[in-house]
Image (cartoon, rainbow, N blue to C red; front, side, top):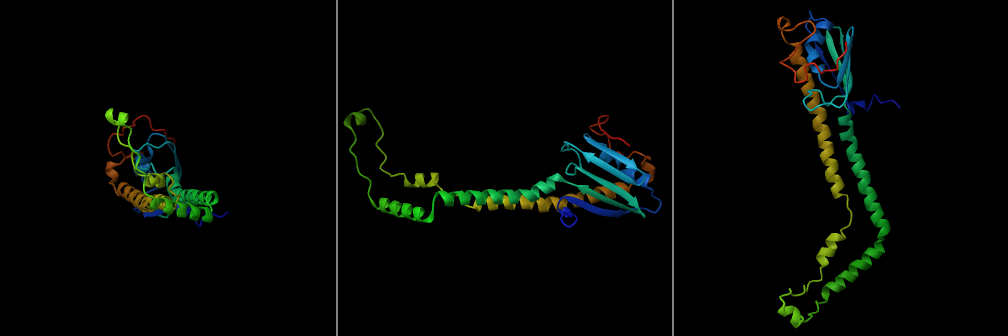
Length: 226
Protein backbone atom coordinates (compact mmCIF):
# COMPACT_ATOMS: atom_id res chain seq x y z
CA UNK A 1 0.00 0.00 0.00
CA UNK A 2 1.40 3.39 -1.03
CA UNK A 3 1.21 5.76 1.93
CA UNK A 4 2.68 8.84 0.28
CA UNK A 5 -0.81 10.24 -0.33
CA UNK A 6 -1.96 9.92 3.28
CA UNK A 7 1.21 10.10 5.38
CA UNK A 8 0.75 13.88 5.70
CA UNK A 9 -1.67 12.92 8.47
CA UNK A 10 1.19 12.00 10.82
CA UNK A 11 4.24 13.47 9.07
CA UNK A 12 5.45 17.06 9.15
CA UNK A 13 7.58 18.22 6.23
CA UNK A 14 9.06 21.57 5.36
CA UNK A 15 12.14 23.45 4.23
CA UNK A 16 14.17 26.51 5.21
CA UNK A 17 16.69 28.47 3.13
CA UNK A 18 20.21 28.64 4.56
CA UNK A 19 22.73 31.42 4.32
CA UNK A 20 25.09 30.88 1.38
CA UNK A 21 28.06 30.55 3.73
CA UNK A 22 26.41 27.86 5.86
CA UNK A 23 27.58 24.29 5.53
CA UNK A 24 25.66 21.25 6.74
CA UNK A 25 27.95 21.04 9.80
CA UNK A 26 27.25 24.66 10.74
CA UNK A 27 23.50 24.27 10.27
CA UNK A 28 23.37 21.10 12.37
CA UNK A 29 25.58 22.73 14.98
CA UNK A 30 23.00 25.46 15.50
CA UNK A 31 20.16 22.94 15.76
CA UNK A 32 21.99 20.38 17.87
CA UNK A 33 20.61 21.63 21.19
CA UNK A 34 17.11 20.55 20.14
CA UNK A 35 18.31 16.94 19.97
CA UNK A 36 20.34 16.93 23.19
CA UNK A 37 17.37 15.90 25.28
CA UNK A 38 16.78 12.90 27.48
CA UNK A 39 15.58 9.76 25.65
CA UNK A 40 16.71 11.23 22.31
CA UNK A 41 19.35 9.70 20.06
CA UNK A 42 20.62 11.30 16.87
CA UNK A 43 23.25 10.71 14.23
CA UNK A 44 24.87 13.09 11.77
CA UNK A 45 26.08 11.54 8.55
CA UNK A 46 27.44 14.17 6.19
CA UNK A 47 24.53 16.33 5.08
CA UNK A 48 21.85 14.31 6.93
CA UNK A 49 20.80 14.25 10.58
CA UNK A 50 18.50 11.45 11.75
CA UNK A 51 16.95 11.23 15.21
CA UNK A 52 14.73 8.98 17.32
CA UNK A 53 12.82 9.81 20.50
CA UNK A 54 11.33 7.40 23.05
CA UNK A 55 9.28 8.25 26.15
CA UNK A 56 9.59 11.96 25.47
CA UNK A 57 9.40 14.33 28.41
CA UNK A 58 7.02 17.32 28.35
CA UNK A 59 10.00 19.68 28.61
CA UNK A 60 11.28 18.48 25.26
CA UNK A 61 10.43 21.12 22.66
CA UNK A 62 10.13 18.38 20.04
CA UNK A 63 8.27 15.89 22.24
CA UNK A 64 5.45 15.43 19.74
CA UNK A 65 7.85 13.93 17.17
CA UNK A 66 9.09 10.35 17.43
CA UNK A 67 11.65 10.19 14.64
CA UNK A 68 12.68 11.98 11.49
CA UNK A 69 15.50 13.41 9.45
CA UNK A 70 16.97 16.78 8.47
CA UNK A 71 18.94 17.17 5.26
CA UNK A 72 20.94 20.03 3.81
CA UNK A 73 20.99 20.20 0.03
CA UNK A 74 21.46 23.10 -2.35
CA UNK A 75 21.49 25.71 0.39
CA UNK A 76 18.17 24.48 1.81
CA UNK A 77 17.40 22.59 5.01
CA UNK A 78 14.62 20.05 4.48
CA UNK A 79 13.00 18.25 7.41
CA UNK A 80 10.70 15.23 7.52
CA UNK A 81 9.39 14.10 10.93
CA UNK A 82 6.84 11.58 12.13
CA UNK A 83 4.41 11.90 15.08
CA UNK A 84 2.45 9.00 16.55
CA UNK A 85 0.46 11.48 18.64
CA UNK A 86 -0.96 13.11 15.50
CA UNK A 87 -1.83 9.70 14.07
CA UNK A 88 -3.59 8.69 17.31
CA UNK A 89 -5.65 11.89 17.37
CA UNK A 90 -6.66 11.29 13.75
CA UNK A 91 -7.68 7.65 14.31
CA UNK A 92 -9.45 8.20 17.66
CA UNK A 93 -12.65 9.62 16.04
CA UNK A 94 -12.93 6.48 13.89
CA UNK A 95 -12.65 4.31 17.00
CA UNK A 96 -15.35 6.19 18.91
CA UNK A 97 -17.61 6.21 15.84
CA UNK A 98 -17.30 2.42 15.63
CA UNK A 99 -17.98 2.00 19.36
CA UNK A 100 -21.05 4.24 19.13
CA UNK A 101 -22.45 2.33 16.16
CA UNK A 102 -21.86 -0.98 17.92
CA UNK A 103 -23.73 0.26 20.99
CA UNK A 104 -26.69 1.42 18.91
CA UNK A 105 -26.73 -1.84 16.91
CA UNK A 106 -26.68 -3.98 20.06
CA UNK A 107 -29.53 -1.94 21.56
CA UNK A 108 -31.60 -2.35 18.39
CA UNK A 109 -30.95 -6.09 18.43
CA UNK A 110 -31.96 -6.41 22.09
CA UNK A 111 -34.94 -4.08 21.73
CA UNK A 112 -36.67 -4.50 18.36
CA UNK A 113 -38.89 -1.57 17.21
CA UNK A 114 -42.12 -3.44 17.95
CA UNK A 115 -41.01 -4.22 21.50
CA UNK A 116 -39.97 -0.60 22.08
CA UNK A 117 -43.33 0.60 20.79
CA UNK A 118 -45.23 -1.80 23.06
CA UNK A 119 -43.20 -0.67 26.08
CA UNK A 120 -43.84 2.98 25.28
CA UNK A 121 -47.60 2.40 25.05
CA UNK A 122 -47.61 0.48 28.34
CA UNK A 123 -45.65 3.25 30.05
CA UNK A 124 -48.06 5.83 28.68
CA UNK A 125 -51.01 3.94 30.12
CA UNK A 126 -49.31 3.60 33.50
CA UNK A 127 -48.64 7.32 33.59
CA UNK A 128 -52.37 7.98 33.44
CA UNK A 129 -53.05 5.90 36.54
CA UNK A 130 -52.87 7.85 39.81
CA UNK A 131 -50.68 6.55 42.55
CA UNK A 132 -52.61 4.64 45.16
CA UNK A 133 -52.62 6.37 48.52
CA UNK A 134 -51.62 3.76 51.10
CA UNK A 135 -52.34 4.78 54.71
CA UNK A 136 -49.29 4.94 56.93
CA UNK A 137 -49.00 2.51 59.82
CA UNK A 138 -49.70 4.35 63.14
CA UNK A 139 -46.67 2.70 64.78
CA UNK A 140 -44.37 3.86 61.98
CA UNK A 141 -45.87 7.31 62.18
CA UNK A 142 -45.35 7.41 65.97
CA UNK A 143 -41.71 6.38 65.56
CA UNK A 144 -41.15 9.20 63.06
CA UNK A 145 -40.72 7.09 59.92
CA UNK A 146 -40.94 9.10 56.67
CA UNK A 147 -44.11 8.86 54.65
CA UNK A 148 -43.97 6.52 51.64
CA UNK A 149 -43.15 8.19 48.30
CA UNK A 150 -46.27 8.32 46.16
CA UNK A 151 -44.34 8.87 42.91
CA UNK A 152 -43.98 6.00 40.54
CA UNK A 153 -40.33 6.74 39.86
CA UNK A 154 -40.89 6.71 36.12
CA UNK A 155 -38.36 9.48 35.57
CA UNK A 156 -35.68 7.65 37.48
CA UNK A 157 -36.38 4.40 35.64
CA UNK A 158 -36.24 6.24 32.35
CA UNK A 159 -32.84 7.68 33.23
CA UNK A 160 -31.46 4.27 34.12
CA UNK A 161 -32.80 2.75 30.90
CA UNK A 162 -31.70 5.56 28.62
CA UNK A 163 -31.11 4.28 25.12
CA UNK A 164 -27.62 4.42 23.59
CA UNK A 165 -27.15 7.16 21.01
CA UNK A 166 -24.42 8.53 18.77
CA UNK A 167 -24.45 11.96 20.43
CA UNK A 168 -21.68 11.18 22.92
CA UNK A 169 -19.60 9.54 20.21
CA UNK A 170 -19.97 12.59 17.96
CA UNK A 171 -18.87 14.93 20.77
CA UNK A 172 -15.73 12.90 21.51
CA UNK A 173 -15.00 12.57 17.80
CA UNK A 174 -15.17 16.34 17.44
CA UNK A 175 -12.78 16.86 20.36
CA UNK A 176 -10.13 14.53 18.95
CA UNK A 177 -10.49 15.87 15.42
CA UNK A 178 -10.02 19.41 16.73
CA UNK A 179 -6.90 18.25 18.59
CA UNK A 180 -5.51 16.75 15.39
CA UNK A 181 -6.22 19.86 13.29
CA UNK A 182 -4.77 22.16 15.95
CA UNK A 183 -1.72 19.97 16.51
CA UNK A 184 -1.05 19.45 12.83
CA UNK A 185 -1.05 23.20 12.14
CA UNK A 186 0.42 24.51 15.40
CA UNK A 187 3.24 22.00 15.82
CA UNK A 188 4.36 22.44 12.23
CA UNK A 189 4.45 26.20 12.66
CA UNK A 190 6.27 26.01 16.01
CA UNK A 191 9.03 23.70 14.79
CA UNK A 192 9.49 25.80 11.66
CA UNK A 193 9.92 28.92 13.79
CA UNK A 194 12.38 27.17 16.15
CA UNK A 195 14.52 25.96 13.26
CA UNK A 196 14.48 29.39 11.64
CA UNK A 197 15.47 31.25 14.83
CA UNK A 198 18.39 28.94 15.56
CA UNK A 199 19.64 29.04 11.98
CA UNK A 200 19.49 32.85 12.02
CA UNK A 201 21.78 33.09 15.07
CA UNK A 202 25.18 34.72 14.69
CA UNK A 203 28.06 32.37 13.93
CA UNK A 204 30.15 34.28 16.50
CA UNK A 205 27.86 33.08 19.31
CA UNK A 206 27.71 29.53 18.02
CA UNK A 207 30.41 26.93 18.26
CA UNK A 208 30.84 24.41 15.51
CA UNK A 209 29.02 21.65 17.40
CA UNK A 210 27.06 23.45 20.07
CA UNK A 211 24.27 25.99 20.37
CA UNK A 212 22.66 25.96 23.76
CA UNK A 213 20.14 28.56 24.82
CA UNK A 214 21.25 28.20 28.42
CA UNK A 215 21.94 25.30 30.76
CA UNK A 216 19.96 22.19 29.94
CA UNK A 217 18.02 20.55 32.80
CA UNK A 218 19.30 17.23 31.49
CA UNK A 219 23.00 18.14 31.16
CA UNK A 220 25.04 14.97 31.04
CA UNK A 221 21.97 12.78 30.57
CA UNK A 222 21.16 13.33 26.91
CA UNK A 223 21.57 10.08 25.02
CA UNK A 224 23.09 11.46 21.83
CA UNK A 225 25.44 9.86 19.37
CA UNK A 226 27.16 11.43 16.42
